[in-house]
Image 1 (cartoon, helix red, strand yellow):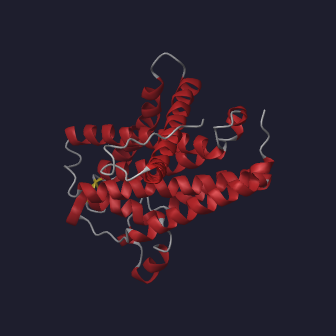
Image 2: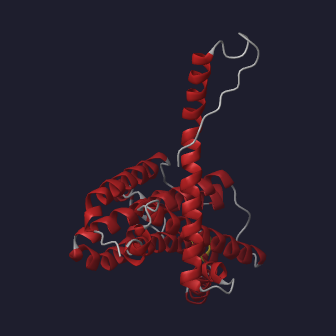
Length: 291
């Protein structure tokens, strides 16, 4: 849509100093406003796709987002209950329920982001018929939806364990939020890259399930970096995922547990994977069949 720019001059020479100055000021104003208008437009598209995803996946009865939260919530509470029964009361010096919560919720966020990114475009190719909708809008809407659901589920599980006396209040909220958000970005970057490769190579899609299972031991979700022998710890920490899990645990337990992490390292990986995913997506876009 074409828009007109209107410049208002006040007085003879006090306002704009002439017609040419008005045009220049109007142009500068338009250049300043354009990025924000573009962001608002992309934001409206993503929010609309998120609402559509909730309705198509969970129905129109208003319980869609509740199940989006309830699914990871039930999984996590089930694992916490099982570990509480079969494991000793403490794991790595902390209550087993709190330990499982921090690891399993991180693992759940990782696996959900990858799983729902994998077929994001394939399940919504009809939306690409609309010129304003791009594949990245579909990925962003699914990624934000899964992150929001997992975050709310994490908060509810945390509140339940807090009421049961299994965990205390977080020792460092900033570190907890940073670790969780970095894990969300890293998971989204992995999902975006894997999805783009799967669209180009069918064999890679079949290997994705195996890859997600391999990420369970590599993520450090069910053990801490301090448990890894010191001669192998540096090699283990070359994997970016354990850094985010360690940051979450450090934010919750503070100095009560020994943690090892570098906040910049997984963030750099997340940025690199998102960039690589977008680059691959632009390459394989011709292989997307628009219905």
